[in-house]
Amino acid sequence: MTAPRLTALATTGHLGLLGGAFLFQAFGYAPCAMCLWQRWPHAAAIAFGVLALIGIAPRAMTLLAALAALTTAGIGAFHAGVEQGWWEGPSSCTGGADLGSFSGADLLSTDIVDTVIMCDDIVWQFGLSMAGWNAVLSLGLAAIWVLASRRTT
Image 1 (cartoon, rainbow, N blue to C red):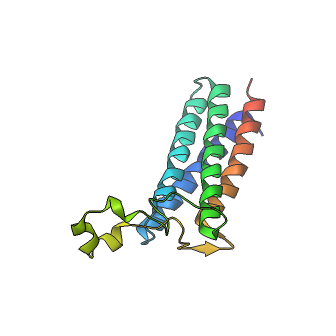
Image 2: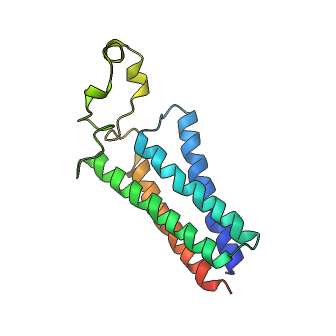
């Protein structure tokens, strides 16, 4: 497969993963902080892919996109480990959250329950959690980006 086709494939893959995240959110699966962190590298990879496809430094853009894919894969793997209890996550969004950051009114409000999404709760799982699938699929996309870079002349 040619470099432009690989680039288009990987860019489309990131569009699918990012679009899927927004679709889950539309169906009521509110994202936690770490879920949101995983979205930014997908957006960056899409931008790098588009730049490569229009001919702006294709090799550099595909390598930057590979780095973005590895970044979101790393965040996803870390998040999946937090969900499984293998290691601790950020105190701001896990079961050990520091309540000192909330005011008295926040603590008494019933609205806060709907606004704080815990990063160590698995809200959807099909073999792997959403974070786990993001890690696996993003690693695959990183491999496609590297292959595209190697085939760029």
